[in-house]
Image 1 (cartoon, rainbow, N blue to C red):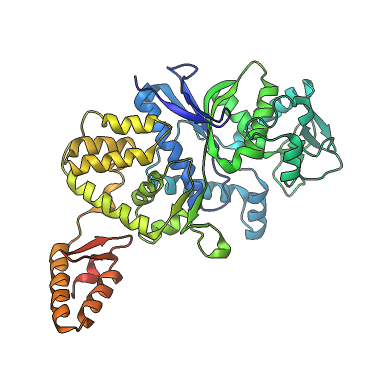
Image 2 (image 1 turned 45 degrees about the horizontal axis):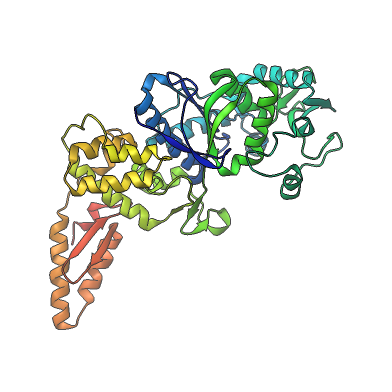
Length: 456
């Protein structure tokens, strides 16, 4: 059996992955808060943990892997969106949940085994909170229930590697008179009549954010499970608080044995921000004509633990590569298994960049059947994602020869007006023009439109 090694955030080292029960491998990943379209950064953990899900299924068998990813459908951001739009909370969360599934499906992500909604697990959350109060780890105050961080000093902060004092200094801690300690966090809070609420021993209210994942993962995966994942922006406070409340509620369990965190995403070398004008939703890119498979390829070309930079150049290169690979594998059946080198790369802390490099070697060697099997292990070259890559209705080689000959003539006449006109026309059609002393290459990029070449 393939040996998998994963970098465990908790131990800060790469470890041999040994599931608690090899016939029942379990993974939980924090999902979206559903109030708007998923942006490009939201999509990165989806793709990362989709590849891990595929790898686990490959190694342990599809029937022996359980993957849960939640939807947070009760949240102050959702309440605010409902108030400003005049739409019901149910309408907003239902619509945005479907958007999320459609957009992630366009990136080739498999649907997890379980996709629990927070609002369907309120009784489990109330029961967990009651248990924490009984064990002395939580207290009620002014309609709120708070986790007492001081009650678990031995464990709090180990995931993020920070002391409580450091966390107080470095975090925007909500100051409230009912807190015994500034770091105590909300498990339950009161709801006014205009907000979503459920009856509880502490009055009508709604859960805090952190308790949701603890209750849902416990209900679906048990007191101990194998892998918990998410973006590294969730490490503190969300994951730190999950660990505290779960370990205190179920002291005989381990909660999650391995913690994986992906790094953040940038756009053209800068942090994605609406103020910088480089903020994109996944739907924005799809509507611009950038295929979901191209987005996925760009994501997988960078290791999950490194910052990923989305650039137009990377998208164009990814599209060109995928077109070549799809042309090479057209009409053939995939090999029985992926290349050993590709599987080994994925098993080495999910080294997707290394796996892509191995697939380039397979393509160069003409190993089409093995390339196809290997790509599909990463969710690439699938039939579901292939509609965009139909062969263009023009002969690009003829255009390449025409531009090359035009340039050769221009070098004699010193008149490059026609060369410049052709280059501009090809660029306007979505082609990247690559010129060298020996030839011309026209590479279809995102949004390539063959119709614009008809008059050239």
